[in-house]
Each structure stands twice: as structure tokens, then as C-alpha cells.
Picture (cartoon, rainbow, N blue to C red):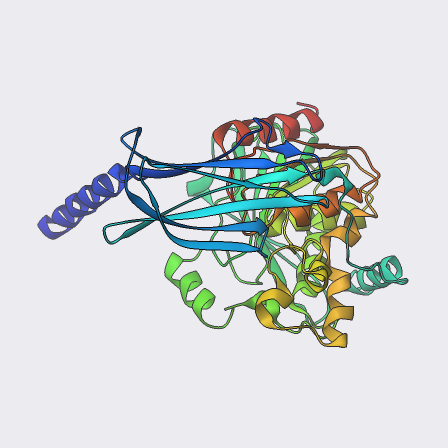
Length: 425
């Protein structure tokens, strides 16, 4: 008992120390001279770079910077000394897109980074990626074949996760022949009745899931799924081992075959998750939304485009946008297939077109809510705007300029508010 107590105290102390680490004393601030960060083609943008310590300018700092379109900087400077702690850089852009100034300050043995990204008429961006002639037929036939496989769902109550208003289960269901199972956490209101439903699809990675009992406790069915065909309630160490081993770079698996690429079973699994929700006796058959960020943002668009039972979706910094932009040396979306993994073969190019968020965006018919930041280096805004501009269905975009591949509290709150409104709550 004494050993357990000491271990518990040690853990509390470690958590207390970790909780105290927040941000850096030194900040690199990069500011465009338009407060909305928006510019017209050929209009000059002046970036002001300031290195601050304790909210005061830090003089005699050495900085490097790169400047130019996202992912393709055209100007690089190293070893500049800022005598008064300030640097001004002026630049322009002739075509629609995003122009980024990224700065690294060297102070002692530490490096500090800051960036800002100016938008040049981004509403004019259009996808580079080509839409295959049989795009919708391929996915319709793929889903018809998948649905020949019964779901055979399994639901296991998780008493420790249940709340006063909701029962919480780990669930699994089959996806397609030889496709294994999808696992997730299902939350169902305890009170007898019919309810709207929300499907949460995940960002990239390998992790456990806790489910959603916070969006609207006791008022909505929620299903949060994983995509890897493994239970979602195991120890973190299991997922870490898989992420560094068998599932390392899973997004690259089979990318020269539209039937065997890893995302084939993922897309099908997301659609079978809709099948599962619709099979629940508590579902009201009316409002059914899908939402997620990054990879989950892409899967939200994809699921809404392929299943007419989905009535709305919300995508935060969606990934998998406009892969072929690489060929034109324009910023492409995560996972940057050809930028990081080599120029595509013809088979890879043909395959990836069936897994491009921009092509699914072209097929949307239900309302969608989007949000992202101009400073996102994982999912560049150029790629996301290209997909967004291809949508003809009702849509709304709420950019939060400074955010990278994360969100602010206000952004999260707005996201949740829109979802609740669409759910009729």
C-alpha cells in the first residue's frame, strides 16, 4: 500500500510539473499589414517581424526567413541580425493563392519560429486534380458490394463510461468482405425516445477513443469511430507500438490500386458506420451529421458526398485535398503523397484521384460548415480552398487566420454550436 501511495504521489507531482509548462517566453511575431490578411493579386504585402521577450522587443537577434507560396518558398535569407528587434519584408503574388513568411530566431541554443500567411484572392482557387469519369459509379458499386456483407454488430456496455444521461458502449461491425471490422464508442441517451445522430470520424494517427457525451448529453446519439480495425479501448502503449510498426505511414499503403489502397476500407468503413447508426432503433431517421478534423475533415466530406442519409457535415482543416496540385508546384494537402514520397507513377496518379477530397466536394448536396487557419502547414489553405471552391451545395467558411493545424477555443465553440443547431437542439 505504501508503494502504491508513493507511486500515486509521484505521478501527481509529475503531472503538476507538466501542467506548469505552457508556451515560450520568447515569441517570433510575423504580422501582415492588412488586418484581414487578404490581398489582391499584384498588391504588395509587408510582413513585420518582431522578436519579443516578456512582451518587449529583443534586440540583436539573429534570424533566418523563407518567403513565397506555401511549400515552395522563392526567397531564403539566413543570419540576419535585427539590431532593434524588427524586420520588414515586402513581397507580392500575381496569382490566387497563399504567400507565407516563416521566420526562425536563434537565441542561445534554442530556435523559435513564427509565421504568417497572406491570402491572395483565394476564392478563385480551383482544384488541379482531375475527376475520373466513373468516379461516382466506382463508389456506388464499391458500396453495393460492401453492403452484401452483414454488419453483424457487437455492442459491449462500458459501465465506467456511462453518464447520468447516456449509456456508452464499445461497438464493432463488419465493413466489407475481407475488410475486417470497424470499432468505435457509441453513446445513446438513456431516456426512451427517438434521437438525431452524429458520427465523429478521426484525424490521422493510431489512438484510443473516449466517445462523445459532451455535444448534447441525453439528446443525441453519437458514434466516434476508429479506422484501423482494432478495439479503441486498449492501453495507449498498444497504439504507440502499432503507430511505430505495422501501421507506420498507413496512408501510403497500396496507393497504386484504387481497390487496395488503405483508404478504401476506411471510406467504406465510414459509410458502414452510417449503416450502423441507421439500424439503431433509437435513431429518429431525420438529422444525421458527420464531423471531424484533418483526416476526419476529409472523411466528413467524403461520407456526406456518398450517403444521401447524411443531412449535414462539418469539416475542420480537411486533409487529402488536391493531391495533383504537386504537379503544378502548388501546395497540396496532407499527406502530400507526391511531395514527400516521390513523383507518382501513372497507377498512383489514377488511384489518388478516387481519394481526393476535392473530387468528393464536387459531389456534395447537403450543407457544410468549414473552418481552418491560414498558418496551417499540414493542410495548406491553398489545398483546402481549392476543394471548398468546388462545392456547389450550401456551405459556410469561418477561417481563424493565425491557427495552424489546431483550433482556438472560440473556433471549437462555434463548431459545436453549428452542429447542435443542425441536430435541431
